[in-house]
Image 1 (tube, helix red, strand yellow):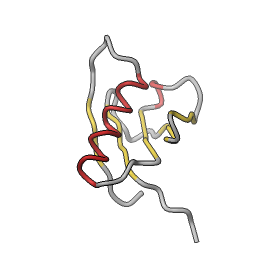
Image 2 (image 1 turned 180 degrees about the horizontal axis):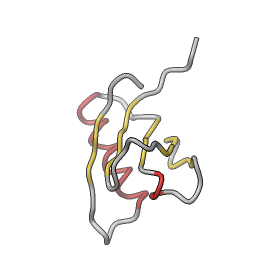
Image 3 (image 1 turned 180 degrees about the vertical axis):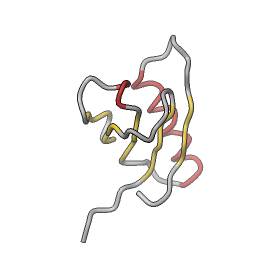
Image 4 (image 1 turned 30 degrees about the horizontal axis):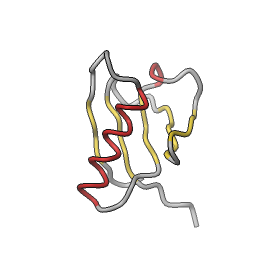
Length: 77
């Protein structure tokens, strides 16, 4: 991913999925397409990668807690 949207949500009442989907909706409103990738802090997930409504959720050490980096990953050519 070369560019994307950094989303912050620390609301303890919302689930991780709800936070990611809210960020994805904002990404779609701003850029006109739904993201396919979201990077989260490793502490946010029990495993290294998950899928949420077609969105790949991946862990990245450089993402702070409660932050979500959303964007479109292009396949390697």
